[in-house]
Image (cartoon, rainbow, N blue to C red; front, side, top):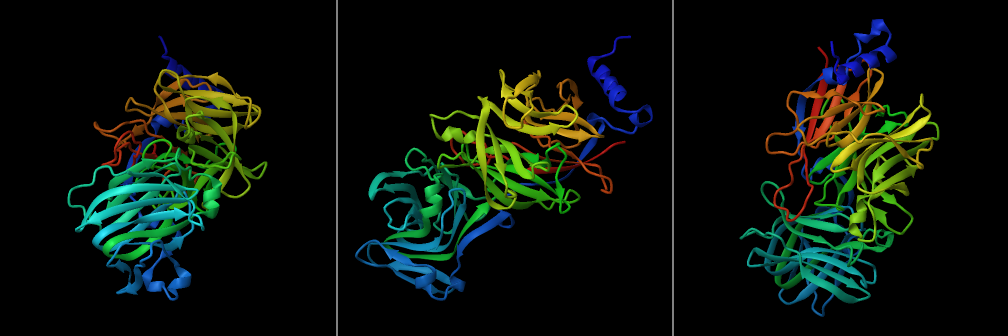
Length: 523
């Protein structure tokens, strides 16, 4: 009788790792049945917003101190609070800026417009105190219709760029509802929301004109409501600045301890997810938590990365872990921010922080460690038995393929010890099932593959009743399987995403997806 390599590998695992009387009680990952529990697509969700600042007309007492007004032209607009709104009006040409917040280049800024009468422009201005450097995004309107969107960049008091960044503005789009600016460090997308989904109406990549990721702008810039009037009035319900989970979430990875065991803190699993922004390098690293027994996802924070070059970088597809031996937060991230600068190269980065980076706006120190090239989706752990650090990652070998790297140090001198596998790979991760480490990978084959650890021998595929794709959707998802301890109503949980891009954006974009929750059980 000829035994297939897969069966032989399974028999070997049982013989080596399990005592005979335990072998039958420990499932292999391809024997787990995953049943879908829920699905959500979060689109600028109010509950997934961490406030930074706000201008709320109903709270204003002492406008001149709370929200100072700057007039740029000889004629001044009138700025008043009327009917629970801030109204900026003039019967002649004026230009007005109303302060509402500090500045964060990865925040989402929203103006809730009640109405725009006459002719003019309304939007956002980010500038230093002297207004010598300014970055302005404004919607122009006339006769109750949006006509254009422009971006103006001023440095050293001189206009260096003033251009339309409008994409598709549906005919008859009114300048009312929510004007949502998603700033993404080196790019932006502007949306208008009335009924239904927010509609993208403008986008820009601007890092070569003004790199807002520089720390000097986080420290010195301030945010203003910008109103330019030929005549008429703009009425504003409120203005907010917040960290937001955006319009798509992807690259879901459980935060772990140094040995790869999932962090179950305060009864919650903790995840890093990519907050989608449009294309590379416009995404942001978000942190979320969830009680695994329910679908109560919470947006907890944003992490950016500092390579000590004066720039805060929005790297993503990170694996963050808490090293209990050294009592420090560490991890590996993918240097996608290199796409904002033609002189830089994509690479993996080792990251570290003494501060718990799960909450609010956090900065982790980042250092290159010699893994340069088209490599992404890293998962790192310390193998106590081997006395080695190991990274499972995807390397572009005629398509992304899983490889295993090894080193005696967590942040240097890695060498490949296994792979590449034969299948396309994405979202590579290492998880324990029944005390054994396995490797998981999404693919473009409508399957999630399971491999042995650390040799990457193919074992099987994951069973799901309703996978996070259909015949129209891409299937390169992140498996993100987690085994729970005793006491839970089910033993396994998986949180995955789909790959449906957000509608209405132009050019290349990676703006998926919705989140899919699965519970796993064995027969």
